[in-house]
Length: 354
Image (cartoon, helix red, strand yellow):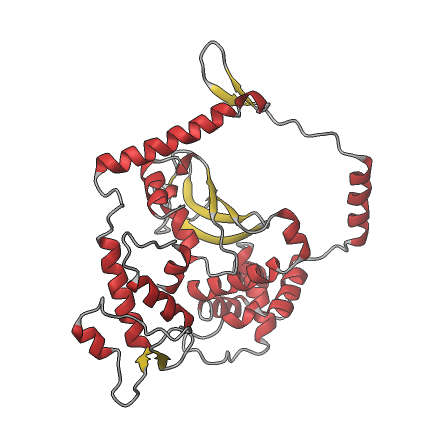
């Protein structure tokens, strides 16, 4: 609820701002332990007359005058806030008003596009059909300085093996510590760092444990199979991904690509076994498999990935990927392909404030 109220711009529909004042007071002391003061920083008492008598009794402790019980106070405020949101005066809850609001915004956006059309060299309207289209972007000729920079980067960048890259990131970021037994105990493997790195390489390349054991000395296929099935789970893998994303954000070069406010969502067909529960025949690709639906940040790293069946409309997962993203990057703009050009998607995005 704190995250939600931090993103939304709440505004009282009347002169009564008691609930919002109480919310601001709760946010100010949200990191406190058991009690918070019943007065604002300027000395004014927090007005909780908006709540019922039972709530006003519940938030106070007779042994602690002058203070509120923090958790009870938060519950009271958020309950009142939810009720206020359901009874908003200016929200268009009927279909006619909702459509009129969107039409007005679309008309204003179209007028802005029309006004800038003469200066937009990339937008062309066919005089015969009236259909607008974008000109193909022609890249400029690569400058000599850019070629020299590319050669210098290649000269200074040593060649690394895939297993070496995984080992370095595991050592620096320690993402391998996210894995382990489901009980939460420490792994009993001999050298879990190396084993988890090898397993990640084996699973990530889709090689398989027994095929990998033929090429990696010192390990057996049975050993890799047991280690791959027991200490890894989807929630812990997502936590490890968030660790890598957060480490990537701190690199100077990632800031050269973007500031993290934009993300692109798209799906990629992946071959699977026919007897897989998520496998299906894709009409677009004409073969069985599944869809790996990625959210790619403008900092050039994947924030989150869903693996979904081929028959699912990918637009369903556009917003869900943002909700499940636990990294420090919090994009506010999403770019989608044709799967995202869907009426319910636009309506839901509008209602959520995107």
